[in-house]
Image (cartoon, rainbow, N blue to C red; front, side, top):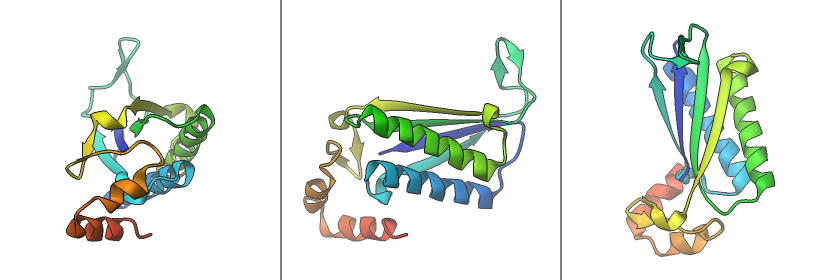
Amino acid sequence: MPTYTIEYSNFKLSFKKKEILAKEITKVHSRVTGANLYFAQVLFHENKKNNHFMGGKIIKEKQIFLHGQIRSGRTPNIKKNLILKLRDAVKKYSKLRQDNIWVYIVELKPEQMIEYGEILPRSGGEKSWFKKLNKNLKKKLKKLDEN
């Protein structure tokens, strides 16, 4: 956890741009929350033409919607810092105007989530959670946690 889903309309994102955005979103989340890099996943979905509406009207402008699901338990200040830094990263690497960028964060209780086959720890409990994992999984996650 977190899972960030990027939906975008009326333009193309190259593989390279997706890779850059995924790395930057992962870094932002880790720096702001203190969570390990291996918890973050980023999914991309391009909306088909004529499938994005606002106010009941078709949208023709370029738009990006970043929907993040994160573990609950972080302070309002951390969450505010997170959404602002995510917005800034999306703006920088997508080259879209700020008013065409949407960022939503939704909190989930960690005890209602499973990742890597295990129930997630509360925010701040990552080290003790990691110690209980099997050796092969620890090795895999350590590789994902490298910059």
